[in-house]
Picture (cartoon, rainbow, N blue to C red):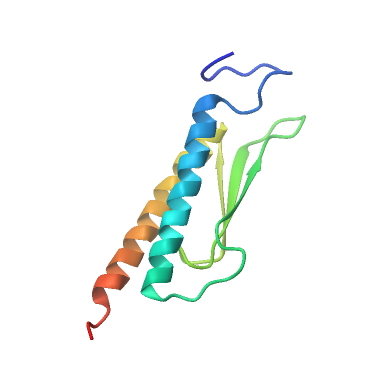
Length: 111
């Protein structure tokens, strides 16, 4: 079973979703490194990612991110009709937050 189809009893995550999840984790860790370089304070849970699958009765796929360094809060959640959609939404936001860290870095006075 390859690409994107799911059946009961088969893989719960496709190869493409697995790749996207790995890339998302790398993106988050990249953002954390940038924020630490700027000197932002951090928590021990930085970059914790949880993946949630629908229940027996249905529902959304969603991922959660615990990250004090990136974004306006500390804990985030993105939902999608499939895991790929949830990851895409999360990556979009994390990219915006990394851009905010870049702006903060450029606004720092040079000594």
